[in-house]
Image 1: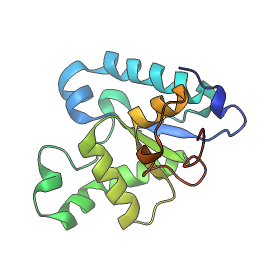
Image 2: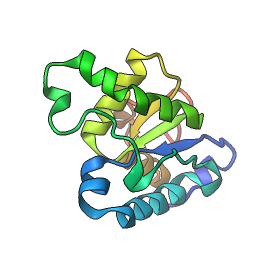
Image 3: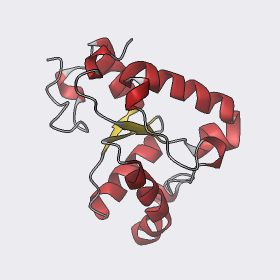
Image 4: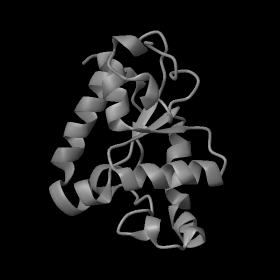
Length: 149
């Protein structure tokens, strides 16, 4: 696992700190571990931090069953601050280790017409290892969809 693939591309990434994993469970130590992994696979110079972050990061608005609640307008309203936070980073990709965060952040991007891609953390790990399958690239942008094939 290394970041050589992104040295020339210089694609910028940020990462979502999931409420359940970080704020409610393991705290800042797991957030630090996640950043270590992300920086290892995209390059430290290509990582953009959200502010606030770690245990103080904003909730995406999709967890705790809200994603499946049937109230998309309310969910998007509560997630707008997260959308703005991601946009402020200028990152090309928002990496999400949580499925609920991924679905919510992707939906926020579509709803508010964002200019970032939402990608599962494992997708970028597999891309960095050169083992990302052709059928596992749905959430990658055109800049990475064919990379390494």
